[in-house]
Image (cartoon, rainbow, N blue to C red):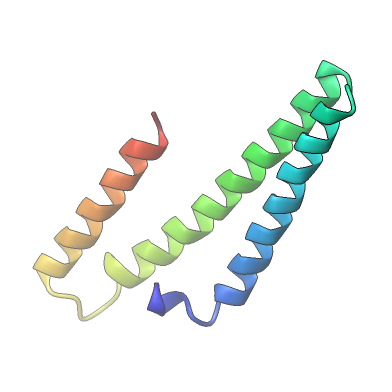
Amino acid sequence: MAHLSETNADLVARVRRIAGQVGAVERALQSDSSCSDVLHLVAAVRGAVNGLMYEIIAEHLEAHVSRAGLEDAERAAGAKELLAVIRRYSK
């Protein structure tokens, strides 16, 4: 993901926040929090991961599919990679 170098710090910060949210889920489970509280925490984690995925997909599209100057084969490869990831993520 070398093309993400200028946004890597932002993405790493998001991942660290997600790690903190996952830690909150773990702590809630260990402290016998209510099911509702745990579900809200898990939903927040899911939303954060979806947001991270969106950002990386957008960057991939810009760098490997829609960037001016790409050859048709490069565009096709970028699209194929993205479709494989989306298929796996949506399962």
